[in-house]
Image (tube, rainbow, N blue to C red):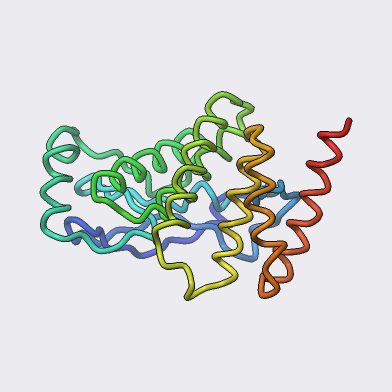
Length: 224
C-alpha cells in the first residue's frame, strides 16, 4: 500500500506565530496494532501514528503537541531568546516521516515545551514517545535515558498537578510510574506505586487488573 493512502492532512495553527499549516496524521482505520508492550507502547502494521503527534511550524520552527497550552508573553519572550533567534530556516516536517524525523520532531517539542514551561504531564508523554522510538531502533541506552526522564516528569505531575478530573487518567499515570520504575530496575518503587492502585477500591477496573497481572510478572522475575 502507498503510505500516502494511510495519511491525511491535519490543519494546525502555530501557538507562537499564528501561522496556519498542515501536518500529516495517520487515518484511524489504517492504524493497525500488531502488539503492545506493558508500558503502553504499541507496534503497528504499516504507518505508525506515533511518528506524527509532534508538530513543527514551517514558518517559525516552534514545535508542539496537542497537549500544549497557549503561550503567554513571558513564554514567547523566553522562546525567542533561547530557541527561535538561534535557529536557521525551519525544517518542514509536515509530510510523511521516517523514524529519525519523528524523533527529531519530538525532541524539538520537548525543547520548546521545556522553555515555555508546559505541564509536566505533557513533557512526560513526549519523553515516553521518544523512549519508544528508540525501542523500535533497539537503542537501549537512549530508551532508558528517556524512560528515566518520563518517570521523573510523571512522578512530578502526579504530585503537583490536579488529576482528579479524570480518575482513569490518574490511575494510568500511577500505573506508568510503577511500570517505568520496574523497567528501570526499581522494583521496590514499583511495589509502592502499584499498591496505591491495588489498595484503592475506586481504581479503574481495567488498570487495576493490568496492575495486578504486571505485579505478578515482577514477583515471578524476582523469584527466578
